[in-house]
Amino acid sequence: MKEEEVNRCQIQEWYPKFKSVSIRTLIHELPESFVEYLLDDSGPFLLPVSVSNEDALPNRVHNPYEEEDYQVSEGSGDEAEPSSPPSFPELELKIKESIESLGGAVFPKLNWSAPKDSAWISTSGTLRCTSFSEIALLLRSSDSLIHDLCHAYDSCGDKTLSRPQSFFLALRKWYPSLRPEMEFRCFVRGHSLVGISQREVTTFYPALLEKKNDLEELIQEFFDNDVRQKFESENYTFDVYVTKDEHVKILDFNPWGAFTLPLLFTWEELEQNIREEANGMDFRIVESQCAVRPGLKTAVPYDYLDTAPGSGWDQFLRNADGELQQQIRSPGAGA
Image (cartoon, rainbow, N blue to C red; front, side, top):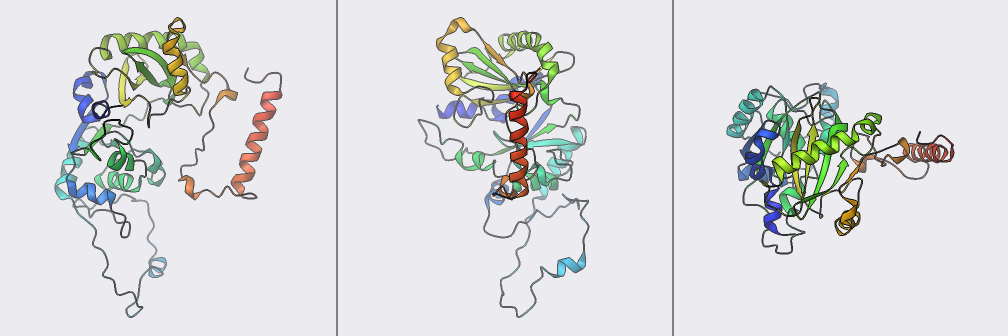
């Protein structure tokens, strides 16, 4: 993989070319002071002071008696000056304007990644944001964004950069009616579409079985007409969403291999598909309940889970495994 291939997958690079076949997005270059704020873990977790007096957690109940337990009294031996929260008024006002122009709700994304791992901390349990404070909370709480900030070029054979010259915040219009079963990851090798995978692999959607052939035809046609000649890389992946009226929308681009998940494939299988051209393009969906890929949808960080022997989660996982084995052994499994 080369640096230029990784760079092409940054949203500020590809979105202008594919704007007409993507979802509405507004992009802001981030000041270096805000990038430093995202990276700073030397002090307490502080959200920026909002010039609009917006609260990232408006549903909190403030209990003054509990708050007293966390206050340090004078003469306690801790004489350190309290940290002052940062403020980014110019950026906040630009983002507020963009949110309003996008219908009042957005989901955020940096150059490559969205803070999906921090959705648990929002009041809605999703990436839906209606204010700068909510966006800052998600970005500041995310571990996955460290990839964008520090490790985007680690898999490049010609690595000369440790980070991109500038970071960008993409605000993408929030569509509450999006159906997760209609999102797919497409794998391109040598400018040819070699594989398509259901994006949400932790759930079985029976309706996809009936639509599979039609979806394959739609996505292949979209790739031939709207992607193949416009995206310069030879090898890459791209995510699409198929709407109810059978329009295909691009959601994202990612490099081939490295940190990109192959989902229902392995990278070895995709390489094999290329060598065995007679197999054609391989489209994979979860075709039964027994084929679901395991995943903990707990809406909390994995570090917060106690999976030690005897814990509640240990018993839950044992019961789930037993139920799965029983389904596999039963005659009607997967029907």
